[in-house]
Image (tube, rainbow, N blue to C red; front, side):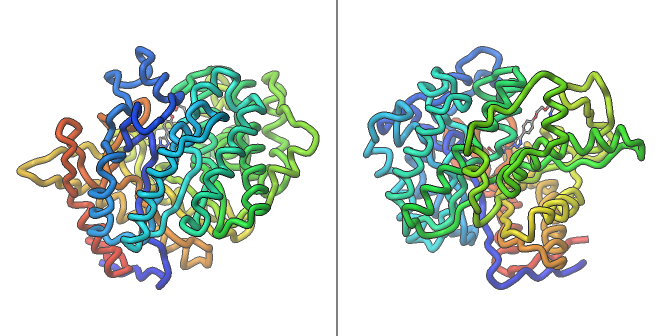
Length: 448
Ligand SMILES: N=NNCCOCCOc1ccc(-c2cn(C[C@@H]3NC[C@@H](O)[C@H]3O)nn2)cc1
């Protein structure tokens, strides 16, 4: 057994997102999002599940906050649903939507929990997607309008801001692979989306500074850490492409003001170019204050000309997997955080990390020992990272509770709290109590 002591001011939290937990999809003046549409498209979401009810947190947020207090977290990452604030995307402001989030944030603050707000966690108003989505500058301008409304409303209440969650998922999972909403399968479209959201990010940061909003702002890329299957240059290059599409494709423009040239050249070979307009890169590379990093797994990649646009395939090495099929390898988090240092020792928060473990209730308890083991391994790596002098400031477990896991619907459970989707009863799992103890002690004690 080893004790890993965390810094005194280290932030401990959990994370969720609006479409995944709120429900009340047709209440409070909320407009239609691309996920309402996608979930209703036959074959897109397991079992035809959708976010109409989800965890009903729109109505049960006070109960959820009581559970957060019981858990002992001091930070809670959530997202605001743009369709609740400006239902048709760039028209009238919906006061009822703002009032809901004021009630929610006030309750968080009352509980001594720091709100950590994501402006965009994938629920784009459908009207904007109908008019070209992130590839259309109208959507970029609409996002800036939405962001400014939120900044002005919540300045002083919210001090930690993220513009976008997982830009790789928004651009490539959703517009190249077609697995998430809106389900396009086109390389040029996905590159246009990536560029549009980067410009929107930069413009929102400019507004944040111009309006003198208090607090810090950043973005939350999801990581695809990978190591080459062999020492061959082809496998190393395939690995580099896989990592770069999740990380460098977004962080080079933000921190360096230009896209990674080797990837621009790679896509040019595939006939796709980045639609850069005059001044875009200066806008995108506005200085930011923090990075959110979402880490789940890592892979061993090798070159395969048949393996998609990156010609990079993951090799199954027989590692233990979570119930969603992702290998459990915490080492990738440590390696990635050192890779990230090429952008400088920036302030980083782990804004998502967790395991899909579908254990169900058994005599009123959920003995999710595999989830505890996952967290134990990953928190030990977090301690290593901090010990190496990297500015890792906090950790938010994904997720507070089981919720709508996108194309997987409700069958995949990431929560520290079990949700019965019929009764909506919340039941803390054994991992909840384990994490509660880590937070209370501010140290990790490995069990072996
Ligand atoms: N790279 N090529 N892949 C080839 C084929 O991939 C097929 C599937 O791909 C993926 C990749 C990544 C994800 C994913 C899900 N979460 C969890 C959510 N994070 C934000 C929060 O809302 C959580 O629910 N994070 N990442 C899903 C599917």
